[in-house]
Length: 185
Image 1 (tube, rainbow, N blue to C red):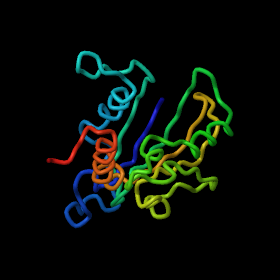
Image 2 (image 1 turned 90 degrees about the vertical axis):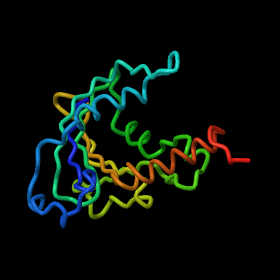
Image 3 (image 1 turned 45 degrees about the vertical axis):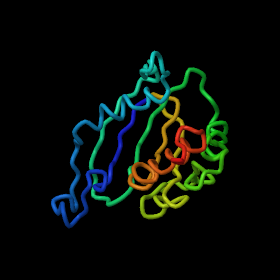
Image 4 (image 1 turned 45 degrees about the horizontal axis):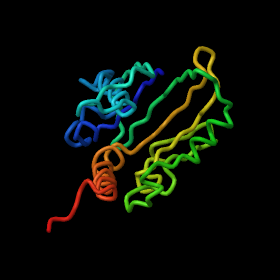
């Protein structure tokens, strides 16, 4: 998998008033972000052995992370190759019908629909789609076959709602629902 992320300035804890040099500018490097983007998914797909997370060995991910003049919303251009290439229709079906444990448990912060697929060629867009499912949903579009990889697509998420604050709240809700966090007696 190859991904290039276009990350909002709020991901650096900034706004345009604090960081005026970002207006009409792009910075092609975010310290530590590329390694994190390549390695963190492998932890999620890994396993716990002897109390430690052992990362999965695949998929192999390479990434570039670019800071762009957008306040909120991280966009990614992604290229993927599968062991067994699915059809475009199968991929779209999996995207729009995906339900994780938060959806199954109907947790308060969980988006009803985790991922939406947008058919229009010019979507997803930060101004139109970043607040999908109150910022907790993911938008995917421009899914098409690729000459080098199997498919390419564009994804968008709200980096502060889904990625930071909301993600932490949803994680706490899940841990509580699963009995890992209990009320003090």
